[in-house]
Image 1 (cartoon, rainbow, N blue to C red):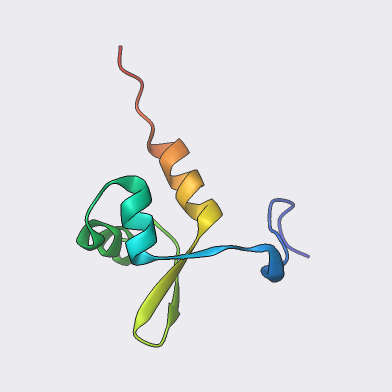
Image 2: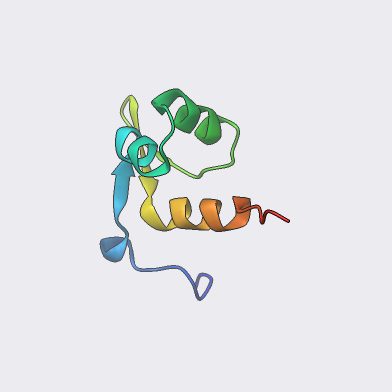
Length: 68
């Protein structure tokens, strides 16, 4: 099947670009840029995008920079 961290589609929570922008405290344009650069996976539905919530958590964890 798939990787062990994949969840059944029914359990995946999708967020809109606006919701991701609000959660990350950035503009919607920044979220679109991340999607188009391939840094944030997304599903295109018509003319809009939906981002899996777990992908946002993963992106933030991988992007975390420790001050030091």
